[in-house]
Image (cartoon, rainbow, N blue to C red):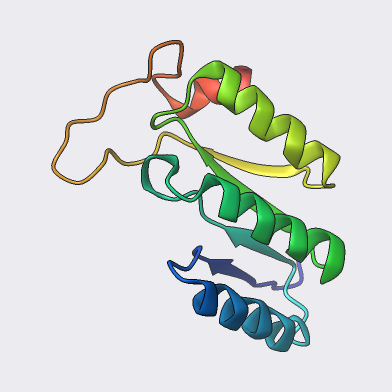
Length: 123
């Protein structure tokens, strides 16, 4: 098959970083990646920003986007809302991950959450 490549982006920590990221994605889009993916911050810390960036990539920059979604600190109700919002924004490619625990902590499933990525997939 034909080789392809993708770009993975991480949600920035500042507003200036977000502006710079959007400009970078615009520039890199001309390279025609098969898709771009955007990570879900540690313990869901950047969930809203991840969704905003993924939506921008998918809707406004015209690139297919794969959004990461992790089990860490993710009750089933929050996952359901995130998946609903992703679908409403045209994001159909989701990378389900268990995710890492917050720094210095042991990993544990959220109450009413998921133990493994496959549990999120089956959900």
